[in-house]
Image (cartoon, rainbow, N blue to C red; front, side, top):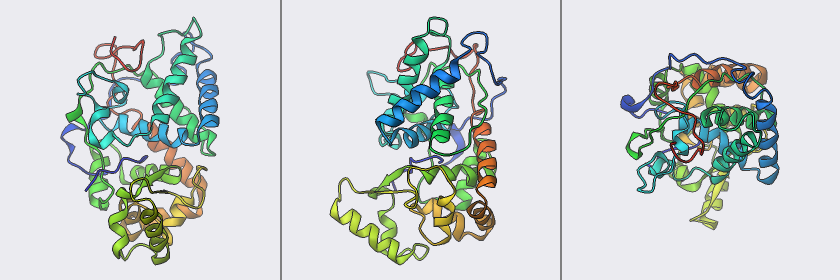
Length: 317
């Protein structure tokens, strides 16, 4: 089964390569004396990227999860090696959309265009800020981002261990637990699937009679995928695919979760109560999402002792 690459937000393979919560100390306003206008610079750049492509917001959110879930939030996903031995070249990352990378690179260029800020802000922190801004500018919560991450010098193809779209609740809970995140965190982070899409290869296996999927929804998806077998896709939240809201959870209650790993959050009675809460109370979802994103952003953080501030996010210094 192909690995699930969205999210978000956005499940459990085994935990051998997962990074624990970091002991490095992050704090808000870390760059206050170095690059005081940092957050405005990044937000302006992200806004321009979103105006250029509606894909940029979900692609950036997804990129953040794929970075943090593999060896920690250290921008290792951005490293490109000539020999191809990097995280991006792992098959589980090959469907990451270029718009996510371009959003981060554009924000990095905007930051470095200010002489006071040039080469003073890590790519990992720019990615974290760009993710927050992608969420907020899509209608989601505007939350404070802890900063102070350093960039990894290492990225390897075999280090990648990401969730699969057919995982059940125990597998999902186990994977996120390996990152130091709770089941509540996992369910809240899954709500990142309120923006973005998935190709037919990620959900096609469910269209042959999955009892947890609404039959009318399945028929519609079959038509989509038959019409374009190679490039067919569907929105993870067909109700409001470009808006960050709680419609994702409302969809689960009617059997309209696209991925099996999403629909299981409602079909399994152990997690159904939280889905019902978020479906009926967007504020509760936003609150728990912010808590979970903050915790995710602390995973595997590098310090000056084992990291650096890359001059070019694609290459170690």
